[in-house]
Each structure stands twice: as structure tokens, then as C-alpha cells.
Length: 117
Length: 118
Image 1 (cartoon, chains in turn yellow, brown):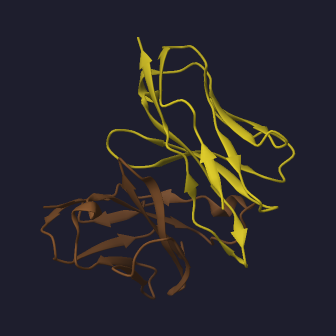
Image 2 (cartoon, rainbow over the protein chains, first blue to last red):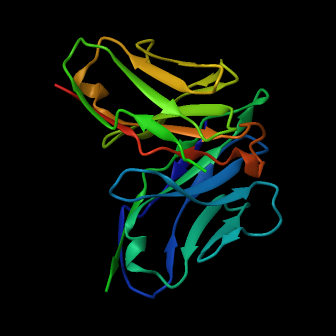
């Protein structure tokens, strides 16, 4: 079974500071993908960044980067120069691959990030 | 291009009724999956369809069912509604769904259908 752990239920950060959201995972699948999604109060899940288990380099997407440490089974999201619009719930998720078809995403409980001016 | 469209956005039902939710994926996406989000259980995978076939299923009772049409649009149905079925139901689409290590596996979510069961 796959498991995602996000240990920070809530975080307050000053605008323009960098933010690190923690995520650890557990899986026995040799191949898997790790994802971060943002969910504003409107409810829609917005894809931020993806890291494949065999990717050699850490993923980056604009102000988002993923600090992937495979041996430690961690996939922390780093947001540089935070903005007020970054206030939202952030979910770490993973997807294994069993029997030829991709599994559903397994989500963590999320981190509620609040950016203060 | 248009995103994932879910209808209705909000609905209220009473216990024992049934409900059908609809999802139109991004054009060209053949994989559609459904998730339930509740404050207590968080986000949980319901099922995934690819080319009209259910390819994967989460741990939900048989009251939860779904289907996918030839145009990739999908519906999910919940019969004999219970209070605990109150949730945000999210639909997501992807181009292939194959290969966990592939970037093509990125799911694009709709805005969700918020179901309240009274």
C-alpha cells in the first residue's frame, strides 16, 4: 500500500519569503510518480509540479521546485518568493503502477499555507 | 483549450436518493478518474476509466459506480445516498494514464461537484 505523510497541517509565512512544504512517502512500487497540487478555497485542484521516481534531476516549474531525496523517501515542495495568491491547501500525492495500469493517486492530508503581507 | 468540466457544481439530496455526476475531460484525454474529498477522510480515489473500460477501482462500496462513453465523457452514480456521502467529488483527466513515471500521467482536475446529503 502507498502512503503519503504531510506533517505540517498549517503554515504562516511572510510574503516574499521562501516556503518548504514537507512530504514523505512510502511505497513498494519500483516506479512511481510524485505530484504536488494546490487547492484554493474555490475547490479546484491545480497541478504544480511532477517528479518521476527515475528522474535524475529535481523538477522545477517557475517558482516551484521539488526537493526529491529518493533514499529518504521525501519530496518536499519549495516555493520561492511567496505571494499572497499562494495561500491555499497544498497536497502531495503519488501514483504507482501495478499490473500495467496506472493506479489512482494517493494523497496526503495537505498543508494549509497562509501568506501574510 | 477547455479544461475539465463537471456538472452540476452543487447539489442537495436526501438520504436514500441517488445522484449522477457528469464529467467532460479535456479534449483528447482518454483517461478519466474520480476522487472523493471529505474533511475526515481527505482525498480518496474512486475509480479510473480509460477507453470506456474501468481500469482501476478504489475501496468504495458498490453503491458507487461509474461509466465512460465513447467520447470520453464520464458519469458517476451514487445510489442509496447516506449522510457520509456528502463530499466534494472531483473528476480528473489525463492523456493516457499509462506509466507512473511518465509526465503524461499528470491529472488535470475539474472544479468539482459538491454534494450535500440531508
